[in-house]
Amino acid sequence: GETLPLDPPQEEWVGHKGMIEAAQYILTKLKSENLLERAFNHCPEKGTTDFKLVLVGHSLGAGTACILGILLRQEYVDLLCYCYSPPGGLLSMPAVEYTKSFTISVVVGKDVVPRIGLHQMEALRADLINAIKRSVDPKWKTITCSIICCGCCALEPTSAVELSTGDRNVTEYMVSRDSARVSGVHPSDSSIALTSHQPLYP
Image (cartoon, rainbow, N blue to C red; front, side, top):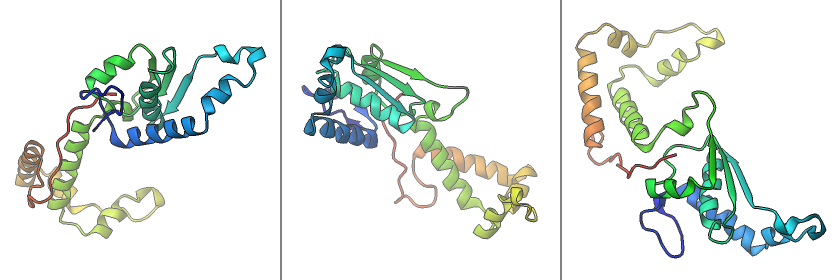
């Protein structure tokens, strides 16, 4: 995460670095080309000067729109932000609390993107590294096992067969998985650190 670029600074307001950069880029574009002022003054006879600013985004764009809303709210106090399926792990809790008064998030069904956070992503990464480390199959076999839908001969991955038998491989895998998750370090190479982050929220 990265601290949101606010004036005055709010050290506890942290957001997703990539989406902060995207929001800053859009903000710079809006200001350098006077896009908002031009839009509000486009048809004053139709009341455009009284229009409210509304930001809308989907997925990563929703996260960017939310952060852009925080950056613009000092100037446009009545702005609204609609976020469709914003990603999890977007903002720190103090920043989330601030956005509640002007941001509406929409999540449909069991969409995983808004529900997954950095902790879950790091656990998934640790699990994948552990599974790759323990895999006894060559890459070609792993890849061809996943193309059953193409009508290819369905090879059974050796590692899946071994894990499904309930032998000691399962126990070893679980111990290694838990160890990798707790330590935050690659089980066989301490130089590859799995970074631990401050929790961020959707």
